[in-house]
Image 1 (cartoon, rainbow, N blue to C red):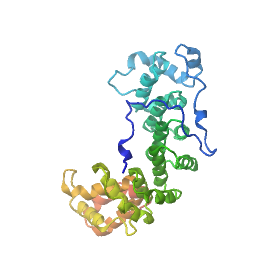
Image 2: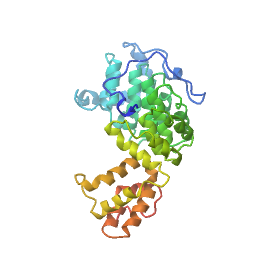
Image 3: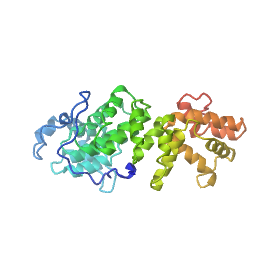
Image 4: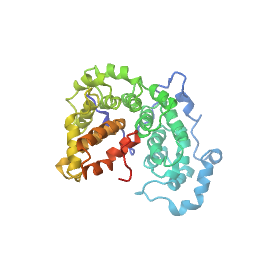
Length: 351
């Protein structure tokens, strides 16, 4: 069995650009060839930089650049990235490394145009960084850039873009986002295909059900396909998930068990619900206490199926029978907050 959880490239090891790859998105989205500028800018061609949409942002940061460029061991900032962009000596690998590790919200205007950079390593870094620098900005431009990158000709760029759209920004739901993810369900790159599948499952898009049935019927499956089954939570997948309980690395076992519970037609299990009730009766102990086990299992379930929080919260609340202080702890917990976000009426934000 393959586990995709450990296969994602790390930011300081950008993959080599690939000369070609899939770009057909059935005419719904821009083709991969449309994502590239006609030719890379020559290092000495400062006139093109002046015409770039980055130029105005870089100019605004110019006065700060000499004093605030981040040292080599510091996280990249908008100022340091602007300095890299304005320097003819900056290599694509250096720019990609800085972009990949950027968490500065003010760098968003600098990163968005780089979705069309001619170097695949830079584009991959942009797909990785955009969710981290979105901040409080409107998500439209970021989502548009990631949709473009999800159709990139480079495997790793598509992979990171689908991960960003599907999982990191899973709260953003629209027909356009779903369409971009659905266009990658037959992608020849395993990680990309599975990230798109999980992203649609998180949105409970019924198009993934026949896909999951077919893939889980195989002898070998990917861990993200198991995650997707759990996120969708359809009872018809329970037996198929049960057929893949063995052979996983230790760090994947909990995710597989969570998917088994989430697809169980009888619910997430009385053992879990009873254990959670006991957890709150015991005063919701700290993480070092053994009683935390059922709380940890619950968090694993909600990682991919947050919409199940009202169901779990209601059952635990019933088991507590309004006993204080356990009920108070429960109503003020993260579980109740998530349940409230999904319409559970009992949540009391200021309990």
